[in-house]
Image (cartoon, rainbow, N blue to C red; front, side):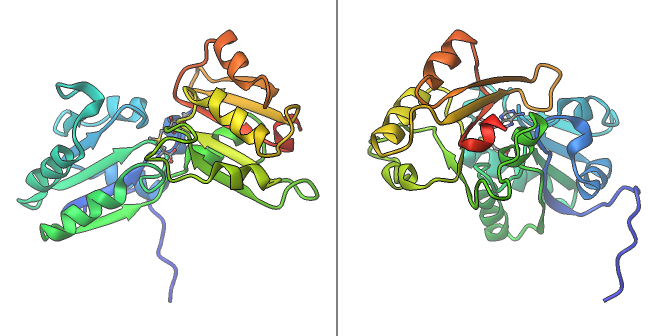
Length: 250
Ligand SMILES: C[S@@+](CC[C@H](N)C(=O)[O-])C[C@H]1O[C@@H](n2cnc3c(N)ncnc32)[C@H](O)[C@@H]1O
């Protein structure tokens, strides 16, 4: 198959394009994502999408921030799905822009399913997930030859033992590779305790990177045992990525 020529022209797609916006720096969106954005009639976004790009959209573009819809960021997913369907139903080019990658804790596939059920054309442009990009921007490689042969990305939005948690924390404790925790700031203490109880060393290196790729990016280096204490002492709030493992001390 001949290679597709790469251009910077707007790329219209009647229907909905899910675009992964990357970790927040406007330069870290993909070329395909930017081309979709340049052709959009409607952009439906939320708080972790690259805000500087949105500010540069043409005034003809209808910009809907679902994080600012009444009831704030708790806009129900069903309301967002309905909005996507409604805006795309007449053939407009709608972009659903999110931070990172839409399929990494982004509920992107629920949107695809809802659009397909409604007969709306949909395509997906992957983004650079903060799970890997944010550690990299803090000079932390998630793998390193001779040090780790695996990295695991885990949501920490529910603490260990929570009845709705789908994470086997004790199994994770038995791994020796890098753990990348997302949405885990609030539950970091409970997670660290469970990992240590399951066999990971309290003095294992850990790092917390907040606001990755933004001018306010900050990195705190600590240990697994002191993770929660460091988060409080350094007043770290979301969005933040926690990296646990030897790579956090390289
Ligand atoms: C709902 S998840 C969305 C993840 C996103 N889809 C991705 O692939 O990066 C939100 C979590 O992603 C992480 N995150 C997203 N952007 C970040 C950033 N710029 N700096 C640090 N963490 C970030 C944080 O752990 C945050 O709580």
